[in-house]
Amino acid sequence: MGGVTNLPPGFHFFPSDEELVAHFLRRKASLLPCHPDIIPTLTPHRYNHPWELNGKALQAGDQWYFFCHATQSRTSSNGCWNPIGEDETVTSGGRSVGLKKTLVFSMGEPSQGIKTNWIMHEYHLLDGDCIGGSSNSTGSSSSRKRGHSSIESSSWVLCRVFDSSCGSQVSFHGEGTELSCLDEVFLSLDDYDEVSLPNKYN
Image 1 (cartoon, rainbow, N blue to C red):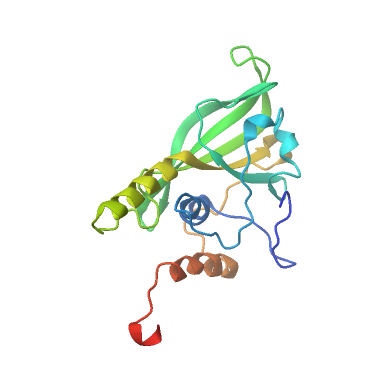
Image 2 (image 1 turned 90 degrees about the horizontal axis):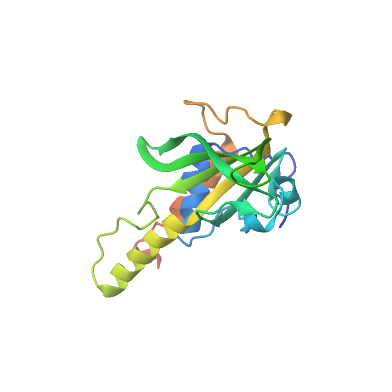
């Protein structure tokens, strides 16, 4: 899947923060399929430099996207990712659904590293925001399922990596921007996994 979007000709992957969290990350943590299923799962610390993601992560222009498990250590053999600035809240439908952390890649030892132009946006779900996480179902099996969803939501993150010197640090879908037709199609597909047909159609 590395670097290939599998989208029809003429379509481009240009998601907003809300779409990355509410659609892609939320479904990943909820163990539901994503539409389209184009973002791979990687182990970023296996790559010594950010540019080695090329051909491995989903490339969209000069940005790379991938899922990975959340970790306290973001160190590779040649450098590390260090957080910068304040965490940003990601909202959807008027409520907070996730956080966006910003990190910069530094070459060398963590305490003496030299900052580069490589930036990572790391998206996190708020605890319990998985699909079905707010269900009122009873029973031990339902409780175990909800507990599993909570663990999954905290263990998965979605990352966007780019070289800021190449002009990738742009505003992704400013507030109030209308969704494109393709955005609406992708987001509407979420509903099909949550809708139950009346018995007469079953």
